[in-house]
Amino acid sequence: MRIVMKFGGTSVGSAAAIQQVVSIIKHWARKHQVVVVVSAMNAPHLRTTDTLIDAAHAAAAGDSAAAADAAPRLLDLYMQAARELASPEECQTLEPQLRAMFDYISDLARSIAVLGELTPRALDLISGQGERCNARLIAAAIRSAGVAAEALDATDLIITNDQFGRALPRMDETRTHSTRRLQPLLEQGIVPVVTGFIGATEDGIPTTLGRGGSDYTCAILGAVLDANEVWFWKEVDGVMTTNPKIAPDAHTIAALSYVEMAELSYYGANVLHPRTVYPVVRREIPIRILNTFNPSHPGTLITRDGGAGAVKAVTAIKNVSLITVGGPGMLGLTGVAARIFAATARAGANTLLITQASSEQNVCLVVPRSESAAAVAALRRELAPDVAHYDIDHVDVLEPVVVVAVVGSGMRGTPGISGRVFGALGDHGINIIAIAQGSTEYNISLVVADQDGDEAVRVVHRAFALA
Ligand code: ASP
Ligand code: MG
Image 1: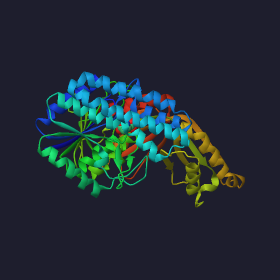
Image 2 (image 1 turned 90 degrees about the vertical axis):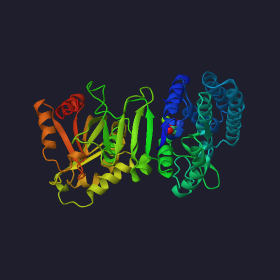
Image 3 (image 1 turned 90 degrees about the horizontal axis):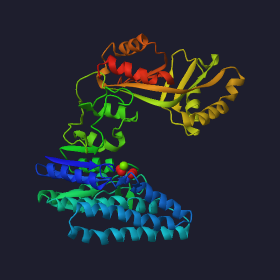
Image 4 (image 1 turned 45 degrees about the horizontal axis):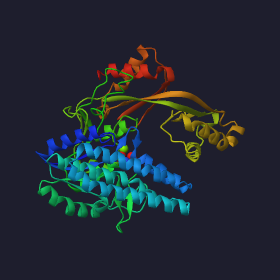
C-alpha cells in the first residue's frame, strides 16, 4: 500500500513531538510505501511561519532588525531539536544548511527594508523557509533512527500558477515531476520527507499554497502519486461528534463521508478544508485523521460513502449576529434579495446562513458578530429609498446568537429527523429563532439565543444518541 501522510505544525512543534513522529514513520514505513509531508515547527513559544511573516512585514516597514533577530532564534530552535533527535554526524551536515537558509532570510529582509516594499513573491520566499528547514531536520532524525529517508523541497515537485500567497497546483505537471522524483525513492524503500505549504511556478519561482497549506500539499501528492490512502496526523483523535468542552460525552466519529466532512469543516470543527482535500476527494482516495500523540487510536476514516447513521455531529458557531430585513412591501418586490446580499458583500461581511419564508415578508442572514455593524450600516444605506417608500420598515440585528448545525448525509430522504431535532429542543424549552436547511438535506441549521447555545447542542447530541 502507498500512503501519503502529513504531520501538522503542532505534531512537529518540539523535539519530543518529532520523536513521536519519527517512531510513527518508522512503524508504517516497515509495512508500506510512505511519503511524509511536514509543516514548519509550530513551537508554543516560537511559531515559525508566523515569525517569518511578521519579520517580513517588519522589514517592509523599515525594521530589518526584526529578521536579523528572528533568524538566530529560529536556527536555535531547529538545531536544538536536531541535537536531541539526530546523530552528531547528521547535525554536522544539517547546521550549515540551516544557517545558510536563515542567513538568506536576513539578507532578503535587509533588501526588503531598503526597498520599503514587500511583494507577495518575496513574502512567499520567506514564509516557506520553515518547511524547508523542518523537512531536512526530520529526514535527519528518521535516518538517525535507522530508516532511509531523504528531504525534498516541494518546489521541485509541485508546480503551481503564480498566484503568490495562494497558488493553485497544475496537476498534470505536478504528477510528472512528483512521480519522476519520488517513485525511485519509494521503490528503494527510502522515505521522502517533503516540505508542505510550498510549490514553485514553471519557471522555478517559489510560491505558497496559502496558510495551513501543508494539508493541501498532502492532498496534491496523494492524488498525483495514486496513494491508496492519505493520512493527516493532528493533535486530536479524529473528528468529534461535537465539541467536548460543551458536551463531555462527545466522542470520535469512526467514519464520515466526504460531504459530511465538508459540512463539518464549515463549523470550525477540527476538520480538513474541503478545498484543500479536493484532489483526493475527486479521486475517491480514503482519508484518515489520526492523532500523533495517541497513534494507536483508529481516528476517523473519511470516504465517499461514510459510515451508517443519519446524524453524525452537532456543532455550534457562537458569537454571530442575526440580521433581519423586513417590511410590508417586500412581497413580490424583485431584486431586493440581490441588493441585500450585494450590500452585505460590499461591507466585507461573510454570510453564514440565509432564510426567507415564502411569504417574503423578511429576509434573515447570519454574519460573524465582528462584521455585523458594517453589514447593517451598508444595508441601511442601500435600502434607504425602500424605507422611504414604506416597502421596508426595518433592518434589525439580534446579537449575539448561536447557530447550531446538525450534520449527516443520512438525513437525506429520512423523514422525521427535523421533527426529532425540534421535538428535543421543545421538550427542553429552547426557542428556535430561525431555521435553514439546504435541499441537499445534509445539514439543518438553527439559530438560538446565546444563552441557549450550549444546551441546544447537548440536547440534540443526546437525542441522536451521539453520546
Ligand atoms: N506552516 C504553514 C502555516 O502555518 C503551513 C501549514 O502549517 O500547514 O500556515
Ligand atoms: Mg499549520
